[in-house]
Length: 156
Image (cartoon, rainbow, N blue to C red; front, side, top):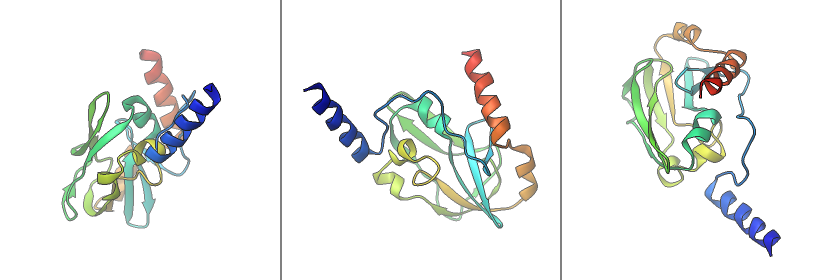
């Protein structure tokens, strides 16, 4: 009976795009840049994809709503451009780099759980045309971000 409940929970979690098992650590990907506010940036030419990190979604809990900006709007490094609402809290999303929004992930309106289940793939939030690629130098690489999260965790 307990095994069938666990199987049901895993299937339900899979449909909802959430994890059914607690994890010991958050995933940090190489070749991304990270802000100290827990957003990530994947650079492709002069454009960049932005989302929140696995660490951030793990601390938020199950995401139930994502406030998305408009295509064509400008974002500025360090400034708010949206919000993520979870069962625990609402958290601002800050732009790790400046630029013009080229695309928003409209799927998040219907499936906000993508941020929990796939923060670096299906859970991306916006794509921007970077206005100042030098801002990337102010962000952390994967090793610095891991250390940052460890130090932050030690404070709590």
